[in-house]
Image (cartoon, rainbow, N blue to C red):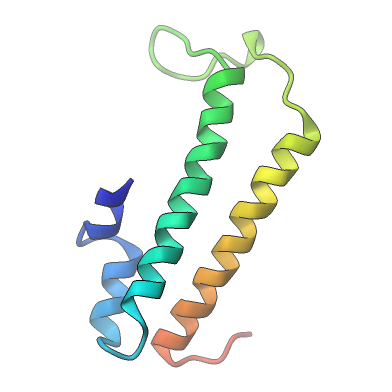
Length: 98
């Protein structure tokens, strides 16, 4: 999870190169880590509810039903976090949101 934040191909690394010093790195790193945590919560739910085939792909035919509220709550948190990161990116790039 943290490796994705350090990888030179990551979104955060790209933004930091564009506007070095114009945003609070600590805040951005915190938000990206939280995003990754939320993303992993969704994948953990998938792992619990959807078995995998021998080739490693999900076996949707054998899947347990997903609770709509549980899925929505996880997605909503992830979406909210993505919107926070979008704000950081917009500020770092100096563009006006559309």
